[in-house]
Length: 456
Image (tube, rainbow, N blue to C red; front, side):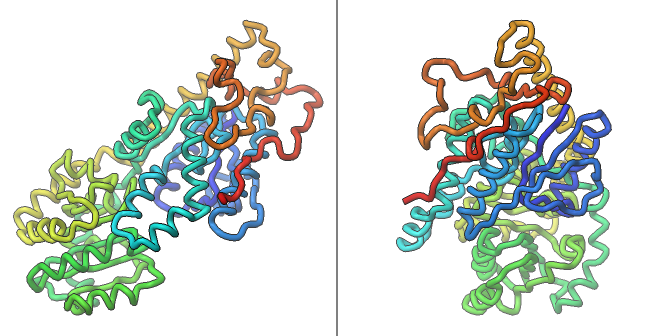
């Protein structure tokens, strides 16, 4: 059995990838061969993974996405994969991991409060138009067996917007290592505050996440201005325009109560120095920083468009308000100035994420892959018993270059109207090495390439 994974940039050092590798390692131990379709092969402990490099030239975000999808789908058309999982929005996959949520929803949130010129720019962006179009076609694809959602928020958005049946949607949260992120990190509080010149009597709110605009740093600074001193905001993360936010803090008169921490330091020191975690994000399907903060017994204030909000609300682990609601955010941060309230919500926060251990999430993924791989074997056996010439042993794979070619934007794949689309399970039941013909014909050069062109 062979599983193909498609991901443009694979960074094994990142938190999500570390736990994802745990599931892949378990599959390798169960004799499942794995191929990774990516732009570059990183240093990873999983040396048994077979890398397939798909790195076409590009300039700009649109050509980056379109070019990689075209290259990866061409390679998949020539492969003998039994199951294809993509972390990118493209049309040649059986499983889609919706790690970035729903682009259409993100765009709607981004348009709120934007200037007229910014709204026009976002709507006319070739990248945004392409991502919305390919996303819509992906969720209508007859080959799509399953979608892995990293929060219930994402699952519900897909159901609401694309009417995908819930049976295809599997919620698998990002794992958090509660042995690494632990309340003991608070032992460093005094030393960290002293290093940054922060009053130890201050209630310290931590905002952690790359991209200050995306994380809602501006809203947090404005809300801080409504809180009494010595309440303090520590911002940790990478940002190209950090000076813009320093100027915002000066404008609101809280420059001496806002600290921008070193993003390259140990994140546990940030959590250890903080009394509460704040993330008024515009849209984040699964903020790892929020889960880590909860494991460190920090109460969380976040937005309704954060995947962490559902855990916060279900477990009384903090407070939630709409993104951009400065008055609401300030009121919730003011609630957390009370130490007793923080202790209660913080204890609930840690309990909420304890079930999300690396071992538990790895097992959940392995069981899902097991069921989906087994379905392909059953479908293949059924096809052979029916003597279907398209799926019997030695016949070309149903994941052929011709069947993989997407329909034009906004239309169903060929055969959908007449009911002749191959069953989803059959579409993934490509031949194994022993089933392949001695000399299978090569697919046409562009047959498996997405037919998207730059929006006009």
